[in-house]
Length: 110
Length: 115
Image (cartoon, rainbow over all chains, first blue to last red; front, side, top):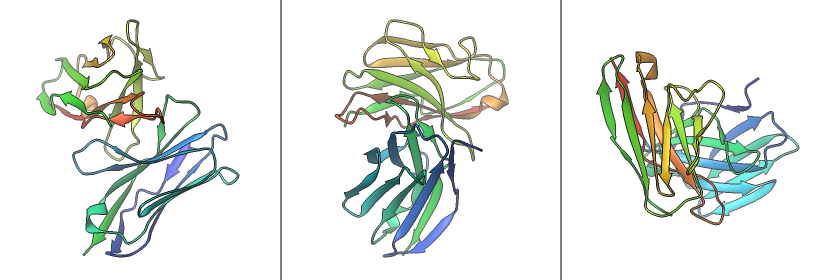
């Protein structure tokens, strides 16, 4: 079993839809959870950062961490065509080696 | 957040040659890292670039193949040595210590194709 599992998609939604992206993990020692957005031919851009369990909201984005289920989610409200990108989940035990999912490719259609 | 730049942005190289990739951060950072991103694969950590000492390599990566330098707190290089087509990938540097979260911020990447 891989340490971090993420459905690669692709995921296609209409503009304005709510998008739900998810990752599961196996290492219960993970404490730091991140979501990165990567546009084509660009480096990953940090979107959300969460320490331990709970929810975090930033504008149209909400990150959730459920450590009991080893499951993290990213919700995007009122999705826009500019949200079309690959979304990478990442997590770590300490502030160092990030373990990434393979990324989910999202397409938001106008 | 700080700006992280990489040179070159892309290159096409011949088998058996070496390429050095540069990573520059516009402010001092505590840690710098090098990752590889292969098609349909997860971003994978190659090594942590330590300032003033040898890099710390992850399992499956060795210094002879991927020598790394970090002469100061804002700059690092990764060399891909004796390249083969299997080394074709995107190579990314990242840095932490730029913000209160101490999480990692990434450069734009170097797209390497080995013929």
